[in-house]
Amino acid sequence: MLETDVLIVGSGPAGSTTAALLSSYGIDNILVTKYRWLADTPRAHITNQRTMEVLRDLGLEEQAMLQATPNNLMGNTVFCTSLAGEELGRLRGWGTDPLSHARHRMASPTEMVDLPQTYLEPILFGAACARGTRARLSTEYIDLVEDESGVTATVRDRMTDQTYQIRAKYLVGADGGRSKVAEDIGLPMQGKMGVDGSINIVFKADLSKYVAHRPSVLYWVLQPGSNVGGIGMGLVRMVRPWNEWLIVWGYDINAEPPQITEDFARGVAHSLIGDDTVPVEIVSMSLWTVNHMYADRYSSRRVFCMGDAVHRHPPSNGLGSNTSIQDAFNLAWKLALVLRGQAAPSLLETFTQERAPIGKQIVDRANQSIGEFGPIFESLGLLETSEPVAMVANMDARKRDTAEGSRRRKALREAIAFKRYEFDAHGVEMNQHYQSQAVVAGDATPSNFSEDRELIYQATTVPGARLPHAWIERDGKSVSTLDVTGHGQFTLITGIGGDAWKGAVDAVRERFGVDVRVVGIGPDLDWEDHFGDWARARHIEDNGAIVVRPDHFVAWRSQDLALEPEPALLAVFSAMLGR
Ligand code: FDA
Image (tube, rainbow, N blue to C red; front, side, top):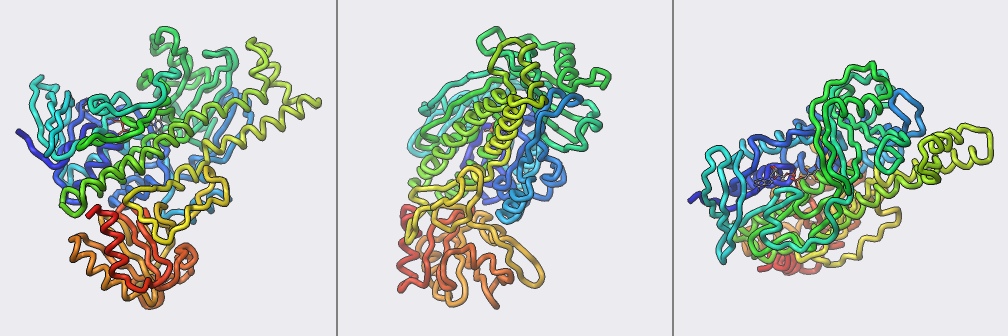
């Protein structure tokens, strides 16, 4: 029987990231995936800063940047009647608004980019295999049996139709929105599948003349009467600037799923472009459903589910693949510590405690964002009638020199600006906060968000928050505080006068056998803080300490040199590691 420490089911963003991380940490793992290759349609694309930080930690940021569409081409979120037709309004999204751009620059060493799943998955999967993952394509997970010491999974080789078993100490179910693993371990799911239907049409067409002057990843097209529900809103999404595209077009979930032909797809594309002289090459067509579902619990004893297996929601806010990758970053180091015997299995319970609230939050947010198109429809008078001709007349009213025209113009401006909760929600992406055994409160006061928590990222070193980014320097080389932490290891950051923490760290190493690096930031220490950015962000005294987990989250902090650093730090690690 094949044996491994961790068996991963699925090679999507969640599974491939888990494999890449575990292999980087030196943990033996096998990945099985159902199809002969990775994602074949460019579904997820918005790749937010937090995800780019995970790629940076893995040493894959540069590769991702080479393949991605850069941030400055992402942001003109357009609302129009067709690409060639009238523009109704625009929103600067994804950190391209000057103020938001500054906040993004200050928040992270990396940038949000557009990286379709067809490009991202090979980077992650390639790194995993190059670093040690044993991967089996065309291999389907069938079922599992858990016992005291491990999991035995039955899989089927789809090329030979032979079934065989793989024995693992732990199993990660990263098998997507129809997760068989989640079903087999009976994860409690809340919400509903199939709340709406969508058609994806991938096509090639040079649309430069309609879009290059307003570069964006998303062009929303409102065409009354041409779709389910009468309003007729379609999305033209950039896959590659400006000649590869994906259309998202709704269908009535309560009717028979439509039979989409190439002619139908070309017709939809021409109608949304608004110019049927543009040559369009249809690449693929598929149907998918909008879901609103999340799991309350992410694991049984030795089986952990992540990604779409435990949070299923529409693409709004671009959170799916991002959250899946961040789930993996949360679990991988915990598995590594437990497998090495450095932490008790109780550490693994913190995966649900920390990630399930985030999963619920993003499922709710993504679905709420769909509802928040309502004020746009309302401002254009699209909800006042179901007659397409009357809808068009109502839309035209905004061009008149009348009280109604003025009211509609104002309402439309405000409704579009409000969509920043979908297209520029930096806080949703970066303000994630954990509470669990792996976060030791110490002197912490809870995170107190003084600005809108969904829109604005607010840096803090309160335990449970992601370590703030600041540029620090040595010998002319700038690095981020996130670069000198992570990489599978705990870090203790201190400053001038914090020497005594080093002895305490030695005691932790000796007692628990875990590696903790010590980073000194200050004049003549490991790293200089020339701008004073770190001193402003750290919220502790020079001689205080911040313990950072391998996933960049703050585990504990001490305002200053506690009277006895050694017992204080030993107690922190004992609580965290459950030993
Ligand atoms: P995913 O579904 O990607 O992977 C599951 C894996 O499991 C696959 O490799 C599959 O073959 C395998 N598998 C399934 N059953 C198996 C079995 N029995 N045995 C073996 N293998 C099995 N997200 C985002 O962050 N930003 C965005 O911009 C968008 N945009 C977007 C647009 C559209 C149109 C869609 C439909 C979706 C998005 N998403 C998104 C969502 C994103 O695509 C989704 O959240 C991620 O792919 C989820 O990643 P997972 O790895 O969890 O599952």
